[in-house]
Amino acid sequence: MAKPTLHFQRFEFKYFLPRSHARPLVSALRPHMIWDPYGTNGQGWYRVNSLYYDTPGFDCFWDKEAGVADRKKLRLRYYGDTLSPDTEIYAELKRKQNELVIKDRVNLRLGDAGGPRLQKKFLDMHKANRDNEFMQEIAWFTRRNSLRPKIFISYIRYALLSKRNREFRVTVDENIESREQFDFISPPGHAAKIYQDGVVVEVKFNNVLPGWFHPILQKFNLQRLAYSKYGNSIRHLIPVFDDNNYKPV
Image (tube, rainbow, N blue to C red; front, side, top):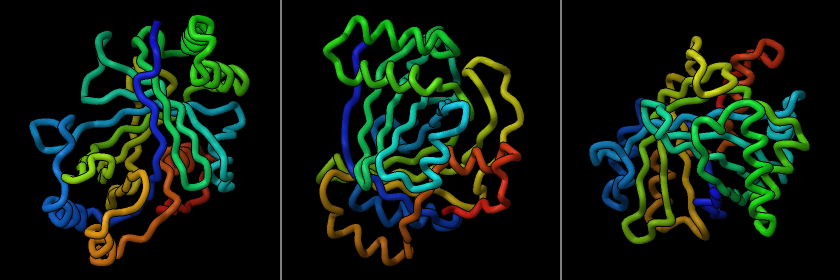
């Protein structure tokens, strides 16, 4: 029976950067950081594909918009440009508790990753692992809130790890595209480009930022922001949420 493959808690700070500044930023980081070994061809980049779930009333979206301090969301994720029955798919439950991010995930098969089959899969995992708090939480959260897939988001991620402390990571996400989609296997529809002139920088760490990183923050004038790929995709794609305000806030 599948068991969680990942559990961590850390701080995540997000920044928005003009796309023309992305390569200079990476160049400034490289003396202190190495490419993520999971990147493609040693260049540190890979494609991230996520299917986000929400309630019928989009409660996860509204919790983010309202700045609810203690909130959570469910997404399915796979990496790479192709999807096949052998592709590793992860169900991720991500909680935000003020500044702290807590994430657990578990492996799924493609056949379990759609519609009612997903809820049944979570219930079966919980029954087989009744002492596992994560299995109980993800089964309860999905069923209690009638979660259904809403938005598919895909982007290219450049990922770097600190040479001295591999727990310190910086990722640069570009070419962010999103579309309304309700499973992984339906023919893709039209994808909207989200902030095509900018990139999203995420800084991920456990305790404190390294001293060498502060001058880079100042050099590139990186300002923290409350950015949500899911939230801004919803506002961009669904007319009822369209407020013509696609700024990175």
